[in-house]
Length: 427
Image 1: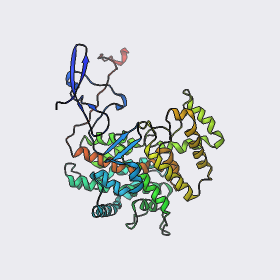
Image 2: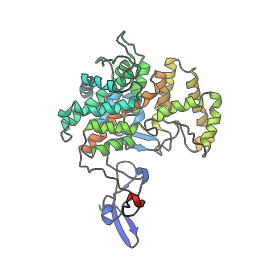
Image 3: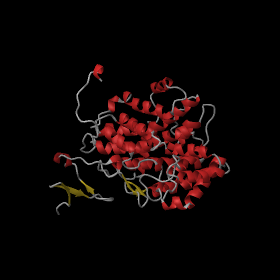
Image 4: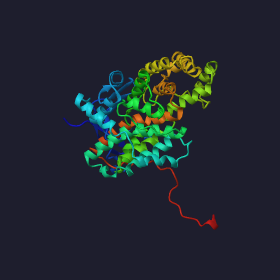
């Protein structure tokens, strides 16, 4: 059957393009040849542009759907664990028992970092933001594993993926320990992925740490919910960096830098800052009214989403997890958490927010949950980066494994036309 065509008419010129269909989602007009006709498209923020073809993650923002390799996020968060989801994102299918056991073993035995990396931390100020440290340390990993940086070699890509997923919790915990002046904790092979992170974050050499299974499960679920999210800003950054042929550690470091922005990965940190700004339950209505005022710069952080025009499917899972954690740590009477729950209740009933579908998103609940677990606010985005690493690696590997082109966005130039240089004495 002949491909469907789309026609673009400019003045008296007609240009035809193929219309492509994916397995899910809107059809796509292939305009890759448009520049040869002397035109570019203008799409600020790439809201209507598909920059790649991918089989990893699908989002339907209108229906509130998020699929990893076809599996609904709610099912994975309820029945799976993070390492199984990592295997799924990397390989395309859920593992059988032998494959899962081998994958878990491989991850567990790559969690240690080179001893020399420990000395890197001494070059940072103690009050440096953990994300600043993480950007530098992750990028520096390529200096230690330069023997497996051939991006055209599938085995090299596989070992790099294992190293990144395994070492990210260790590096993240080291960022925290360094900031508070405590000794780094070595990973323990007997612990699960989430337990190991809690051990390295909160453990000390003085005594063995005990774990509340509710907290470990909640953290594992947070990792699952943040593992991938299609072609967002940081993932697009990883792909763009990867299109240059850069090594995977440099690409992931670039993604961490993009994630750091408050409009992206810093949103759950912004939620806690907002709650502190509101301060008390009695002040909620005043801030609600400020949020409705288009002339006021105040925004309710953690409500609404760039993609989801319905309820964020991750938020449904995260809300339940949030309440489980608050119950486990006895924080329901904490003033900050009472404020958060009351804000949630009011916003869900307020006609303005309901009409505009500004529902609480995953950042609203994950920030509250992480805080209840005892994780400081400046570590929230670090944990996001830890979880998202597998998505970045899967997206990078998918691109490198197939024919790809160097990313090179175009522009609509509105500056000066050509003009002549004027000597300083004549200006």
